[in-house]
Structure formats: structure tokens, C-alpha cells
Image 1 (tube, rainbow, N blue to C red):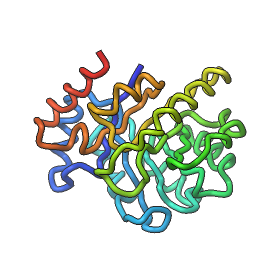
Image 2 (tube, helix red, strand yellow; image 1 turned 90 degrees about the vertical axis):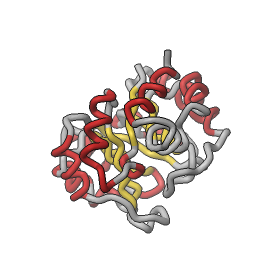
Image 3 (spheres, helix red, strand yellow; image 1 turned 180 degrees about the horizontal axis):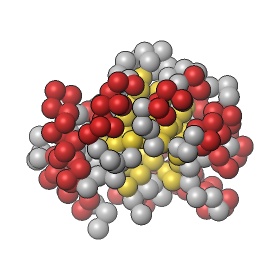
Length: 219
């Protein structure tokens, strides 16, 4: 079963409440919220106050993507803001296993996010405390980048690993996810799709129309 999650860093923040209302009506499955510290990635984005605001506007699951150094220092903060899912970058912490365990201990789904050039090898040591893996299909930090074609093989490699271990781990893809990339991502084994300017937040149609047209790609 596939899930669609709009990336709120791409939303019109001046009309956030109305856009979330439209997205809820369109039946999105979760909201993806990027937290960037200007250190781990060369950009600053959203923070805890934003998450608290979104939590008041929707009952959908909130997927918090911590693109920050030492994410273990912020897990409880975002849990208290209403996170249902938190992903942390393998490259950003020296304490990956314990950090994932901490997320799960708070009753939150734990995710590992990895950059395009990061090997999947480390997963064999943390897959038992991982609920989903965020495969970055662009270099993290900015919207509007082009999908890196080698990531199709990486999705397939991860999917094969999950099947071998028999673990219940979802594959989330994040970066230039739209009509031109979703079919191959789906074929490779992805199940969660972060939607930004390529799929939802553009002038091709209304938000509801764009979500509906994206769903058609899975028929």
C-alpha cells in the first residue's frame, strides 16, 4: 500500500491553514515537515512552533524529518510538538541505534534518512529499531532539484534487503517525486512518497486536482 505525504516546506505558508484543509480533503496520508539547521544542510527551514501549528490544523500523521546535526538532542522536543513519525539522518549522529530506540520508546515511528551517496550497509545493525527508511533522491537542503537516476537502483537494493530480513520497514522517497519519477520508484519498491513542487505545489491545477492526478499514477 502506498502513502502520499506533501512536503510542507513547499506550501504557501501565508495560506497554510487553507492549503492543509485542501490537502486533508484530497485525502493525503501524512504531512512531511523538514527541519533544517543551516549546518547539516545549507538551509534553514521550519521549527517546533510550525509543527505545533500544523498539529492544531490536522489529525493526519506528522512526519518530522530532522536534517540537523546531533538530532538526538531534539527528539523529545518534536515528540512534545505532536510528531507521529521522526526520521534522523545516519550521517548526522554518532548514536544512531540509541536515538532510534529513544524515538520508539516515545511511541513514535522511527525512521532513518540517508543522503544519495550514503551506503545502505549500516542498516543491518539498526533495522530492528527502524520503521521506515527515507531515501533522499536529491541532495538534501532545497526543493526543485533533479532526481538522481542511480537512486532507482538504491530503492531496489533496499527493497530486496527488507524482503530478505522479513522486517516490516517502509521505504520513503524524498526529492523530485512526481509523474516522471513515481512509476520507477514504485516498480523499485518504494511505498511512501514525499510530494513537493513536482507533484502538488505547482500551477498545473488546484491542490486537490494535483493530488488526484498523482494518485492516478498508482492505478
